[in-house]
Figure 1: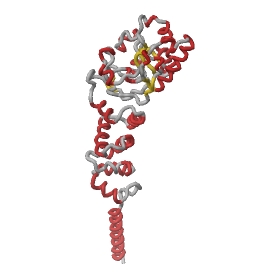
Figure 2: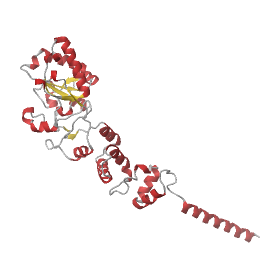
Figure 3: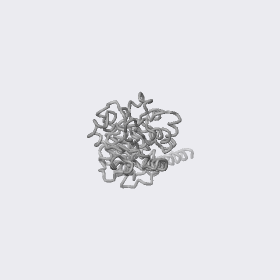
Figure 4: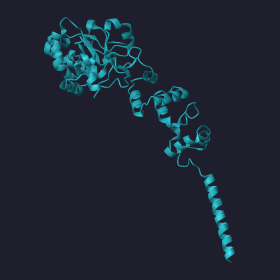
Length: 319
């Protein structure tokens, strides 16, 4: 009797083992991921390594986010979010190019949030961004890329490089304020504040913008390239504050820095978000002298703080 029971027990255990083996063999490792269908499984099994499959399973990644790129050379499952950010803003780009450039952005250690900000605000195109990241300035090899040129304290100087960046929100400056009624441009917010400042100056002096005339507004990379000699040594293509679209230069008439309008600007321009870009007292920091008529829009609150702390853009950027 005992022997029969033992045989039955062994039989039951054997059957249980076989059943467990069948269950394990039929277990679908992708079952938790509802976005992976039978067709996807075949492609995944063919194109992903065991390590990649584990990454996919552990992170329960939505198949819709990586399947369009999985067959491309160089595809890396861990970079799928970068491919999608690029695709979101470059839908006409070939999938192979998206993978190649997405991998390059990862190599250059761009964060996803940084890329979203850059593409959403149209700061740089994809090609510009990669070019900026991998190629040094032809003028100052040690200059760092300025990836956030719309920032209040963005820099375009001997230490920071913006390549051929051009703001996407440039608007026409009122020609009543420009030298010889020449067409000039500024970023929209800066231009709005310039209009407000000029309106108030007109109320005070009965003259358009108090009689001030703007000599330069936004300057493009190509314009600077063609006019370097007349613009001065501190304006190199990709290294000029004027290329940011927030800087203006008032006509340097004789003794401009002793003019009552100049003194008014020093005392009041910050109320409209403008600061003197190159004060002579900060020449050792900015590297620029004799440019008293250059003013830069940084924002009203930022300008108040800079005047109060007596700091330049370079110093604020370094904080």
